[in-house]
Length: 122
Image (cartoon, rainbow, N blue to C red; front, side, top):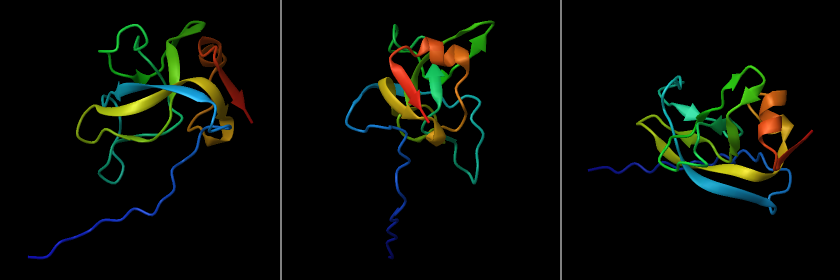
């Protein structure tokens, strides 16, 4: 019987401008609407998430939605989250300094306004 060992030598994508100064909370990331690429459903680090998770920890973290001039953004995913097999645990930054160049999408003005304790730096 042969055994296979998988070793991942990839580096973690760093979204923090100052990695020693941030506050993150544990969240469960939703898999709904995430498109599989090469058989994996990954929500990338730097995705801005919301859905009422700060007031109700039983809710799933979902990509933030902007309607009108307001966003339900509550934080930024610290690491990639693999949701291939359903909702999965992750960490959401609620305070800190985030590198804009490391994000999968530029935050809207409404998202920046909603994330009062996060500073986005070029």
